[in-house]
Length: 396
Ligand SMILES: *Cc1c(COP(=O)(O)O)cnc(C)c1O
Image 1: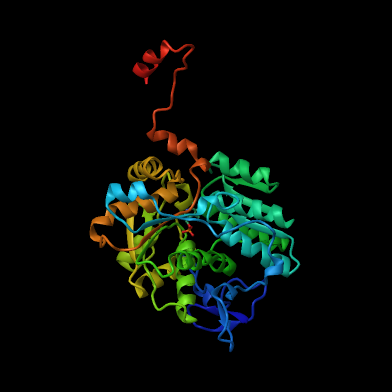
Image 2: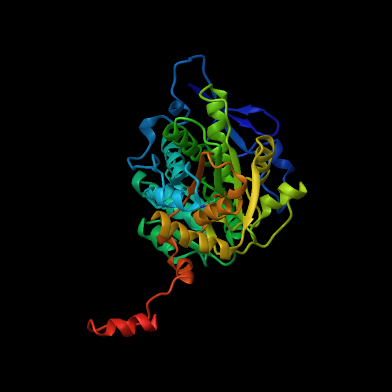
């Protein structure tokens, strides 16, 4: 199996090297406050017909660190299915990845790629999960990680990254500010930049979720709900199914629902108007809070080409859905993951009852308990003996 990069805009192909991130020609056209132009996708070239889709990977097995990423469970939430009368609803639970989020899929491939090329320093910007993920996977691989992230990121994600031994640099400002600083830094110190969508290995790593869903269902589902910020997971989901189609494993690309927060809706907005406008994102779902989505153009193009759809959900709906999923399925997902479920609840009346539907739950609820606490009654009173139980019930 041979592999190379192919520019998604002009189609020119390049050999894969650690210094090449974007198409050198097309990326020149990018203006300020605009999504990336000239994203490179990995393309495989083979004469051999007898390979498995798992061979569609640009780094050989021996370079991957020994840490169990991916192969996450596809839940069949029986109680929830009955309650909402959707018998073929599935939840892909990526919170069981080693660092508790979907981001491990990208970090895993980036780590392997770095090791293959004898690179031991990795830099990135993150809203929280990509950083704690790269820190954890990097620790397993013996890599040095420098992480720029908004100083308001959920504390659990910062603690996680520090536990794993990363160098954590809080940034005054949002993810977009951290993104720009991380690029400046990696240019100065020569480390490998893992920024989402910018480093082609991020989309390529994330595509493995589609391979797994295909294997677990023994077919491509009808719908997949994807919580979306930068649009890199969405592009990864498409890349997986595009590979499956291109190399003859299926002929179906599922209908993808791009779910965004109402106030972090750059891609949904561009889907309607055809243009990316500068927004000032604000949502409780920190993992999908992005002003300028890195993979925006790429995501948009694919949504249009493969009949994808965009929906937005309010923070209130996200918190309600998070609670509903916790108490009907036993799955406590972080607000971004809950956003995908909220999006599904919003459109479920329009979906065929028999449709096979997959909700991507991308991160663990334990990563941001402060948000989850907003919709529950946290006990503010402790009892000393059993007689006080009645009083306790009254006070709570
Ligand atoms: C990063 C992230 C997302 C969004 O992925 P994008 O590639 O930015 O669209 C969704 N959920 C969780 C938990 C994440 O960490």
